[in-house]
Image (cartoon, rainbow, N blue to C red):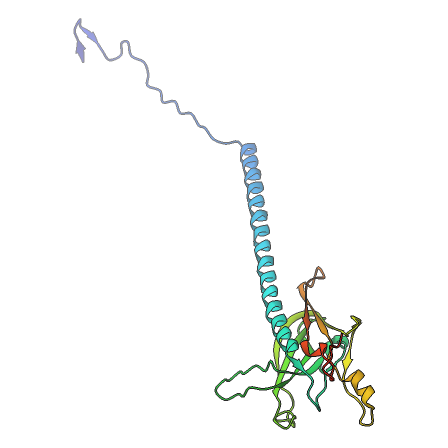
Length: 251
């Protein structure tokens, strides 16, 4: 190829073409450092989320226990506040047995009969009984059961030959305790109004009366591994227990 001046462009005044490439990247040390930082960040996020989930679960469990305690204590309060002592029926209470087994924890007559079927069930006084049963799946755990049997007009229990039917009132319990207060304010672990047939009128007057008040304490398991629990209690006054048989205040 010619250019003005007669000089050939090829071979004169030209430079060889060179392609220069620059390789850039991370060194092994930089990669290891970035991986370490990422692992630390992920660990911190995981721990934070795990702690949040644990707090949420603990809050849920506590809320559930508060609800169970509220339902159980309201039912017990209604039963005891309406307790009466008719002729031929007694108020019998005993301390909780070892392991939660044994006869009823508390047995009395109350006007707080629960009508499960209003169309067929009648109103009236009923024999209320509370019993403890051990949980076969959880050691050191008991369930609180309630029985409600309507009294017949003759004063006996309807279907007296049949065993009482218990319904679950509260479970996941570590312990249950009832304390009975007499007219002097003394706290007793048991109460029994039964008297002998040949008892005098004075002896009957001393035994045939209801407690002035009853304190109920429910202790629910919160964490068995940590041996932690939530305790709830309520005090129930028995209006009938404040009146003696002769109509005078019992206090």
